[in-house]
Image (cartoon, rainbow over all chains, first blue to last red; front, side, top):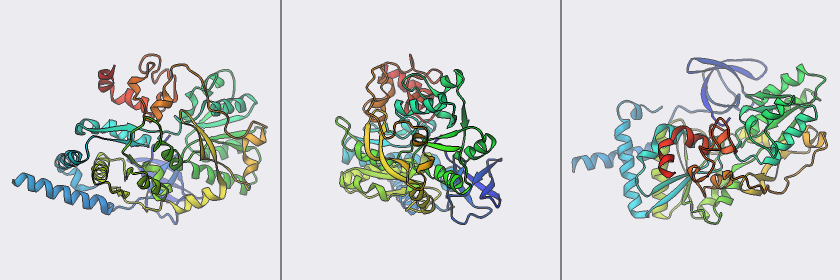
Length: 79
Length: 371
């Protein structure tokens, strides 16, 4: 019951539910827990509810760590 | 997902991060980290990440599965409600969790009305379609499912629905992590913070970890996100300097989901809760607040309220010690013999995200080496 998956919102209905798609599979989800959802938004869905909108960008820390690690790897390769 | 991890760079990325881990471990000495999220447990096994970890770095699974930490007495209450004639709706994982005398599935076999739901919202049509029945939703889960229960209850209240109530067993994660920092015999140097819980509840509740000298990091569920977080955890431990950072290929706000948190504050209030294997933890549960108290199934049907005494029953099941990181599944005498996914003796084997269930499905070879 703990597994959450990203879905993309296709169509929003007046009762606060929406049609959403993930990997070609469509399902109905609830939007009560996210602020101003829009068609095309990617949301994390857990137990039938969108629990967060997902940004397309990576977190700053992941970018920084990756850059640092890949520089170190390149230096080790040259040595 | 990030292009640079998938377009041929993944192998190099993991090799570079593994080298970083080795280097930092040379400074820190051997370290043990705990993941407190069932989805992390499964992702770590499924990706084979454990086989990439250098010697000296151990990963333990904590109480990250709400099904697994449900106390026997809580299952007993759900069965009592079903046997009183209520239509009980529950997430599927709860069906086979053993209570003191059997599971909800066995109660259904004896004629009780217990049905599986995949979402709290399904309780609304169940109540509408059965106007002459009392419908009870078995509300379990951490900060991820609690807001869904809250959203459902707000509709029950505004819609004037009278035949639907909730057996509220929700629990929150930060209080149990505080307890894990001081379990006798448990040496954990840092935590992989619970993924989906942090998406909702944010990182604000974990400031006590730095004060307790524990490293902490947030990660998504992709192996490269988890690997990056592990590199950070080892560096924090090596430097003795603690700050929570987030490793996500799809970013979310660090304060969590404020809409969901507001709704939870409207519907619930904190209470003490019983955790299987860990006992009574103050302020770690959620009960219905005063505006919603009339939807509490305990009050409605005159069941004993509040957490009971911790269970004391010795049937060989070691779920309690496994949930606290004191034992790994193969160290339990029942694991793989008297306790399998088809015939589970304890909750950690019932749930697909439970520690024992994950070991059984993904880690047979390592488990066999232990035996």
